[in-house]
Structure formats: C-alpha cells, structure tokens
Image 1: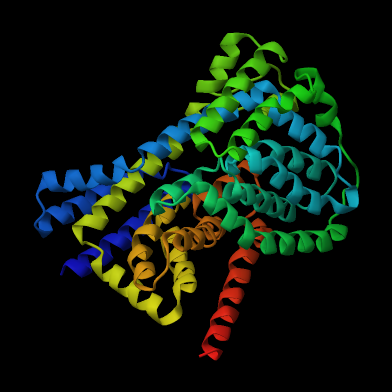
Image 2: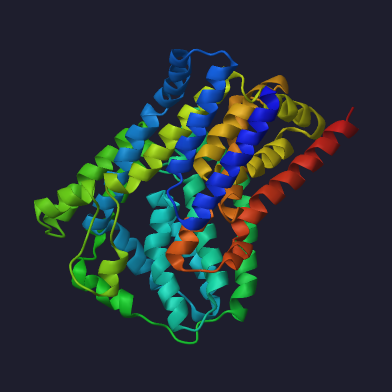
Length: 445
C-alpha cells in the first residue's frame, strides 16, 4: 500500500510542479506541498513527527555552505554591474560581431560572458537581451538566436567556478569544485566544438540584414569603459589560480569591484551598497538601463529557498525509506545499462518531475550514489556524470524552469530549445564515447 501511495503522491507532485511552471507560479509552493504530503506519509508509515522534522533539517543543513556562496554570488553580480566589469565584457564583445556569422557569435559571446558571471539567468538577462535586440533589428528569426544564447549561457553555468549548479554538485557529491571543473572541461570541449561548428554552419542562413550599434554607442554614456573595469575579474581569476576557496576568491573580487565602482565609475556609496543587496539600477529609460540591471542578494533569494526546500525534501526521502522501490529500480537499471546512461535516464525523470535544475541535481545525487558505489565508481565520476546529464538536460524539459525562465525573459518560442545544440551534443557525445569505451574494454577480455 505504501508503494502505491508513493506513486500516487509522485504523480500529484509532478502535476502540481508542471502546472505551476506553466502558469508561472513560483515553484517553491508546490515543492512545499510535496514536502508536507510526503512528511504526512512518513508519519503514517511509523516515523515520529520529530524524527521527520530532523530528517528535513538534516537535508537543509547540508546547504548552508552553498547558501553562503549564493549570497556572495548575488553581491558579486551587482558589484560587477556597478563597477562596469560586465559592461566592458559586453562592450568589446559586441564590437567583434560579423553580420554573416551572427548565430556563431551569439553562442561565443554568451559563453564569453557566462564563464566569469557563472549564472545562466544573469547572462540571458544581459548579453542575451542585447543580442536579441540586435537580432530583431537585423530581421533574424528569434528561435535560433535564443537557442544559441541558451547554449552559451549554460556553457558557463556548467563550467564557471562561480556557477551555483557547479557549487551544488560539488557540495552534494562531496567533491572538490576545481577538480570537477577540470574534468568538466575535458568532457565539455568536444561538445563545445561540435556546437560551435553547427552554429558556424547555420550562420550564413541567418545573417544580420542591418547592424544596430545603438547599445554599444550608449554604454560609454553610463560607464567609464577602461582597463580598470577588468580589475574585479582579474582578482577573481588570480585567487582561483592560487587555489583559494571560491567564496574567498569571490569576496576579494567583490571588494575590488566596490572600489572600482566608487573611484572609477564614481557611483555614490549608497548606490553601490544597494547593488549588493537589492541589485544594480541605472536611472533613465534607454536600453542600457533596461539591460544592465539586477544582481544583489535579492537576486539569489529564490534560488536559495529552492535549494533549501529541495535539500530538505531529499533529506526526508533519503532517511524515511519512502522511495526505496525507486532506489531499487534505478540500482537494477544501472547494473544492466551502465552508469552514464542510467544517469541520463534518471536525469530526465528528476528534471521532468522536479521542474528545477536544483531539485534534479539533488535527487540524482541521492538516487545514484549507491548504484555508482556498487559499480566501483568514485564520487568524482558521479559528479561529472551529473554535470553531463542533469545540468544540461534540465534545460531541454519545456516545463523545467532552467529553460522556461530564460525563454520567457527573451520572449522566445519553445522551438528555441531545438537550437540549443550544446545541451544536445554534450550528452550525445559522452554517451557515444562511453559506449565505444565499454565495447573496447569488453573486447580486451
């Protein structure tokens, strides 16, 4: 009876999450409903209410280091905007666009911005919006442009040391962030090259008829564009190179950005402090104030609450035994088809059910940890497979907020996901490589 109850609850939670995603209701609400329903079921199964609360808290406690980093990321984005660091990247990035290779440059430029920024939503909301404005003025169809922007944004979301998803995977799997990034670079480069070649081949079919340089021309009216803008980025890279913990590297970058905003951009201290907490804002009605805005701790509040709620949910499921039959089924599947393919299938299930990249990452880690251990795989291999499955595949689920929110920000059609080639090529290339590797290994015996 418990198994049937859990299946029914899973379906109910799936419907609630998908409905909320489609209707634009914050995903936290159905997630909290799911936590309540599964908690009640755990109590009915025989767990004491206080024991259930402890299960929830045990999951939430694991997220404290991640939440701290999320707070710093929010401040970093706001300060990079006020210091002109982001404006410098956009200003010089847009100047190199070739009209006949526009699609290709959309992908490269969003990669260029997303790697230091580390947030897909922040990348889409800045350089992505600018590229979309240029595309509309140049009569380029929106779907391929939005797909290229999504690909570039998630290239950085996956590979950046300031990425919240990379930090979450590192925390959930108990692995070193920098080690994970090195391994991700090795598996991600073939997909990056493949996606680049596809966009390069498609670009002549989607050229810019005219080039609108209004945004580039307007930027110096709001920011002093100079080498000083790069100081916060250089500080971040230097501290990462020196192997400082990422939170300290970002804190020193925040400090340098504060002084660049104060001494070079000459913004009032109140404006700079505001950018740290509620986000950066420029006065005026032009395109620049509409695009170069946001960040701050408030920008990360939604992500933090979802992480805490998701981790609490995971703690409950992990210690209550409610989803034991799911765990058994996935373990059996992993033994039959191998770890990476099992990771892909599990990712599609959790990303479809959870409707957020965060919950999918947490659930995949929980569901695959034991099967990977039984297969002789290390925690580092688990972390890599999660990065090469959940992180990118969640974007391709139409109702998952990982892709739905950026598309809404860009006002782009759902067909844009078909043009998000980095998300398609990464798991495909990994799967082919793993299959060939397994066959060679079997032939050697």
